[in-house]
Image 1 (tube, rainbow, N blue to C red):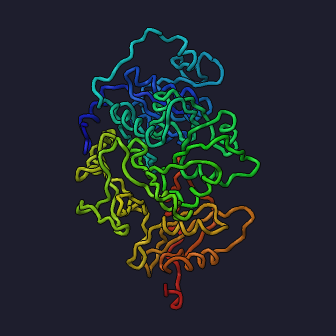
Image 2 (cartoon, rainbow, N blue to C red; image 1 turned 180 degrees about the horizontal axis):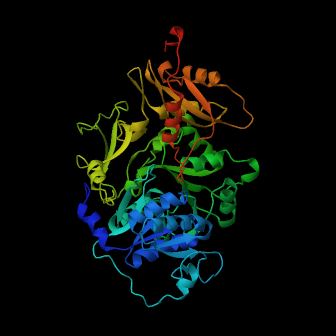
Image 3 (cartoon, one colour; image 1 turned 180 degrees about the vertical axis):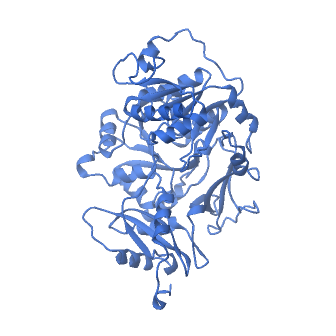
Length: 507
């Protein structure tokens, strides 16, 4: 098997001979169809986050140089604003194709060169010959990471990588023939974890949701007899914490994949009580979505429920399409011992790792420094080879010289009966350097104060790991369900150093 252990600059440069086609749409049938139509036309598909504002959409359109953009009617105002911004900067805007709910001749407010999706299809040529890639390393799509600045990273996927990751995801999710798949993962995110192509390969039926809600999920499962679905941990949290009136008994066991952020073990237990079979994956945009999975061992079935949930929370081993995954010392590149304690950085290599970042050779070189893709995620490796994510490198809290893994603190906090959601970040401190700061969303009907939550942690953790500050508010999330900790870090930074009297400095 041909492997790609590091980036291939030639593959990235090859992109410049292709036209890019953009899409700004939720999970609708047209978005699914475009995943096939664009590559078959010899172009590169560039899906945009539906939560972006006009400014960010204009930045991505300029960066990608998309010649056409397909826009859902609900996002038309955002697209108009983006194109107006492009024109003001002297950039030629792409042609617009409107995805509407009714036939219209042309999107209103755009030039006469704009079209409506169904009308465009009706005027197509049935004898069109598919444009096959010249090389399996030709780009098939560009997926933008969830950037927080005006300098986005466009992750280039190849035909080969997408093909292999599609097959690997089908295997690890146990998707056989004629599945019924419920779309709760955005198709714009890693091309729906490559399952846009996978469902077609298995002759599957696609149930599309414009907006994800617990009621729509349960109704869709009941009506369409859904067999498989996927979602970030926030989707699982929505399901287990949904109102009783929204829930319906499952017609059969529904397999659900989750990944994108390490979920608390309690979520696995609650989902399985509802009748879902949960598979845990790990990956990044740069790995086409899923890269590793927690392959379940039969001997774990006899463990107590709490221990089973902890095992399932591990990120596991690489899937069949990836050459290798390891936990390494960031500086020496030596593998960390498989002791479940020593922390290192998750590194991956293989065909299902991106070709590189579009128009950003420096970021590409940095990402592949040492011949491996550096994830930026910190983890330990257990004696059986399974990896377990502990934190993002930038999320580690260093207090008094001790490293605090925020995920460990969050896992303890999720055991508090009053807590619905929680995220821990570092707050600046003149004495300790940093102290843990917990942002908490309470369940309805509960009334607890900060000291109650702090004491709960101090009873279960070394005192230096327990939060010293608790803020009650909703957590900011991006479109894929990840908590935007950079926002919380800024809020914690704005609080300044936590004042301590002499008697309060004992930790």
